[in-house]
Image: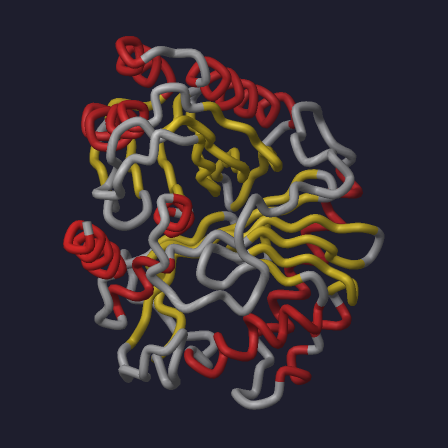
Length: 349
């Protein structure tokens, strides 16, 4: 993909999102149809999941979202474009912020300002968005509404996660190709290191070769943020690998999507990179996770990553994960836990 095409694709998405910030409910349908292909393949978080075609996306995602948050605004912390295996992608993470005016996904409205962390990948073809993958931190919306459906996180939780400390994550202009290459190589080498895990010792992955010791890792509500490599290992990596220790499992053809990671290629631009996997088999659940006993089930995952590199190390990592989907596979419906708390409140009143 040429720099000109990459810039054009970014301009299409950026223009779309800026207009959505001021669209008004009655004009949502018209605007969305100017940017999204009529046959768009749209995949989102539990409980929205898959929507087929632009009309379903409008009625199943955009209109309910703006009905619940009528003054919704999007702020990107990271925004980049890149190519992987001949596919052109634009990706971003940041926050959707608005007044919670009407119930959304069964979560009771609060009437207060609410922040929803998002991670999103668009595939763009011939000037139109043809494929979408989106993770929203729905558990954070529950938390802001006063519902705690998971045990207290090991990592830091509450408030917003940090944006890039250098303040340069929104890449609206072309970036240095050499910096892009360095970032792509560093992220790919780190991922190869993860595959060396022996099932017991974290040191076998040699993560200290790739990460700064004071790296920051930002996980979803339920896991929280870690502010050093040591915290990352103690608060997330060790509990996660105890529960889901397998590496290199194969997903049946047609059952999953890799986003921006194929055959050594990584979506990258300048000092930033992104990638994702969607409904991809990743492990058998062999140990307890967040107080849920091991099930022995084969697990799939919806997981995104955004990375920032400084010199020869990775220093920040934003990691949206659809934990609601993970827990459904473990036999736990986190919405049911919320509904039980709603009924308890009604009874106490």
